Length: 186
Image (cartoon, rainbow, N blue to C red; front, side, top):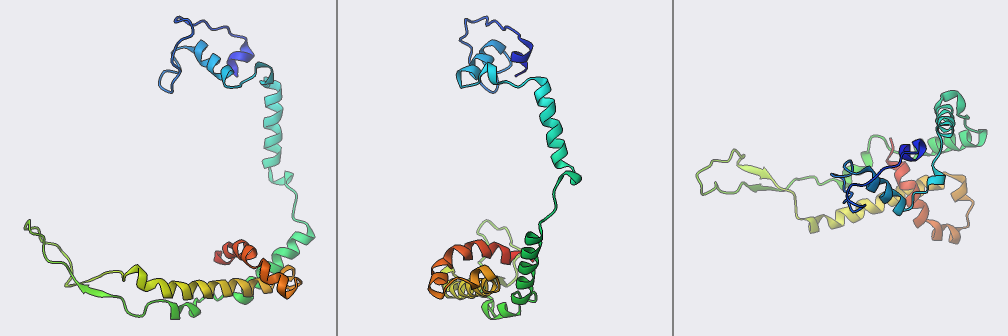
């Protein structure tokens, strides 16, 4: 951009056959500029300094707190509705999850000492996670419970309530994906 704005004419000492790589891009400015032009840069589309300055000023104005517009009444009402629905359906103590956590951890004896003579500082019993396949029923129950919680949350929102029963059943997978991340936020 600077080369085109300043109107600089570069010359290549190797008849425009220099390799332009990340490591060697500063060695020949003529080949570097030519590579930019070859991949689609157009000289007539480069903005002048005045245009760039105006763009920077506009970005600065948008970033200032006074330049941002507040929420509309409808947006504020929707936010209040979502917060109220969340508070009615979310258990912040997580008391309902206690039935889904394993009550007893699997304890197995620690492995024998390594043959090289190094002593391992392991306790006589080491906590080892259970087999992943044995946790699948627990995972399925937990997933079912979470989906039920998302559905209960969605029922609190008028848009989901007004859909017909058959229509709502068909829509559940998509809203569940949309609502699930909302439920994770405390």
